[in-house]
Image (cartoon, rainbow, N blue to C red; front, top):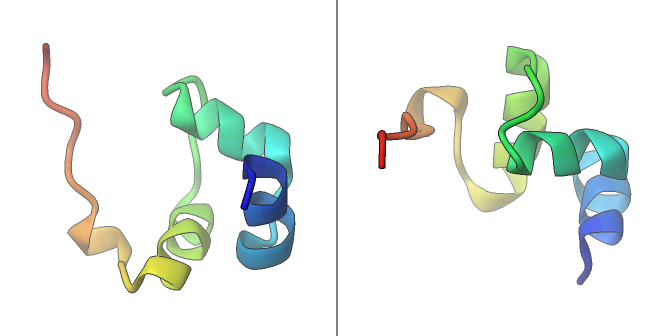
Amino acid sequence: MNQKDCAQKIVGISPRTLAEIERDAGNPSLKILNKIGRPFGHQVGSVAEKTPS
């Protein structure tokens, strides 16, 4: 499955939105984060914080 299919068919968001989030360029709402995590069995509370490199 590619990014476009994942975004549109599974998560229900635009591919551009998903790409921005993956690049840490977006500012997703809790609703969007829950949509992304749901197919993988995750909730917003279980998303790990990005650690500095």
